[in-house]
Length: 224
Image (cartoon, helix red, strand yellow):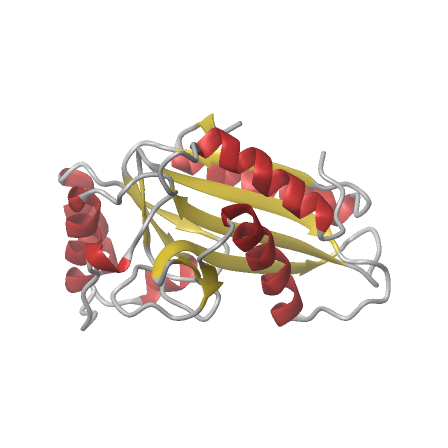
């Protein structure tokens, strides 16, 4: 099920779960969540000119900005947008391969979506990247990773895999907010609502989450 939670609390929980797996690499966690409207940006954005001014402007407009520990790009959060946080450790002695970990995540989402799912760049989408999951040629999900060497076993790595997905059409207000944020940061690009899609008719978010959980199990990891 999808937990309704404050975005700042969800991001802090991600770090707590990553720390837990670092100390207990045989455990893992799967968390689906959504929050009220806000923006989430990677820590690297704090080094951009005018970042603090942009945060203050968006906060005044009702779009607080939170920072996350994974990479990626700025994303909106809010009704109709839900997130997957999967934290686990790779087997002892296995070298970390980012492409393999992204493939694990994307393949699970693609199989849960079914026909029409693919991956790749989507011009005009927020958090665009090679590991977007698309549905019928439009962006459905964005993905990001954080990797940390386990403290309990230095031969293993803890992986925080994150996906942001659209249960419903992305709101025009969310697109306006993220474009305002990017403009204030001096970014020469614009996010387009038409670059995105959402869960197909007849597939609810809760049913999709059940399918996705089963697919994550099927690619070889045990879920709590």
